[in-house]
Length: 138
Image (cartoon, rainbow, N blue to C red):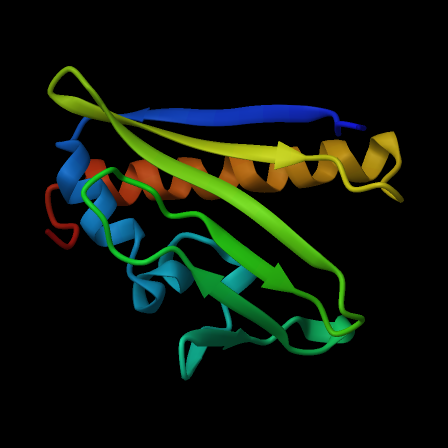
């Protein structure tokens, strides 16, 4: 059995975890904070289709709504590669901890892994700013 190099990227958000989950888990809201989905998502049955830019459209399937803060999602790339992403929102006192587990893909070099980690960190920082802004969606 082999395992991948993993990195947990997280942000503490000063907002009730349930509010963070309710906002972040809606695919319709993801273009507001997840830059890889900035072009938006279109519903296709149980899946969502995202414009993958030069690589083509990608298919995304999200975990069903739940009371545990799980926003895991499976991304299927045009070449058939499937990437499972673990995204969680958990209580942290009166706030929330949002955690994304980045797994290094088999063909990913160090530079690409670091770019992905930095990209995810920026997205979580955007989510933090949105959720801590008094004018942000509730």
